[in-house]
Length: 228
Image (cartoon, rainbow, N blue to C red; front, top):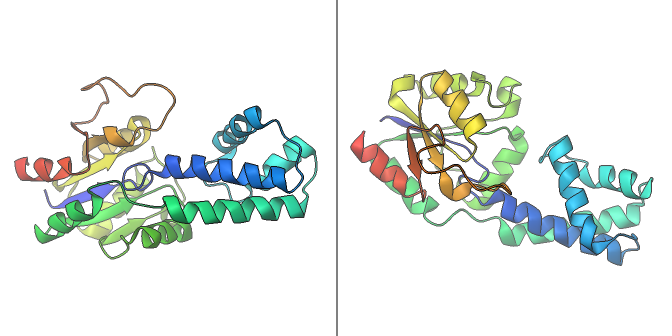
């Protein structure tokens, strides 16, 4: 095993936990700034829009205000954005075990790459906030290929840059229909990050994720590499 390819959100960082906390803080701030909303429904409405337009959407609160209030009040918008950013700083942390695991993988000479659907700047900001920016040999983002998973193109790009064969690499990710499917399409072995599952539905039963192996913790990567 010469290389590990990793998803970013919900694999290295508990992204959806952060997103939910930030969204709730933003809604509370917008309500305090004068937006009339139903506190019990507002969060569900905002998250529904997130999943419609994209979890990385840059103008999510503008979209929300247009739908809910039919206009953008910039006092309200500013309050929401500031609250979101302040909350984000407290929640942007790697999953337990990520840093020591990456250190040990580097010590073993394993090449490391991030393959993410996030835009390049957001990916690098996130990695830097996490303190992980120097661990990875390659970071492949949406901007590098113009395609998102489950397209196999981002994985081909990562393998090309790492200069490794598909059979020499392993992909770890939290979304079987995107991470596992696209990695397998190029011949890369796969690891389902069961610990990162963030959907409302229960995760796939053990052994039913479609991955070659499954991880209950990011530290399980070390066992996978040692047994390869």
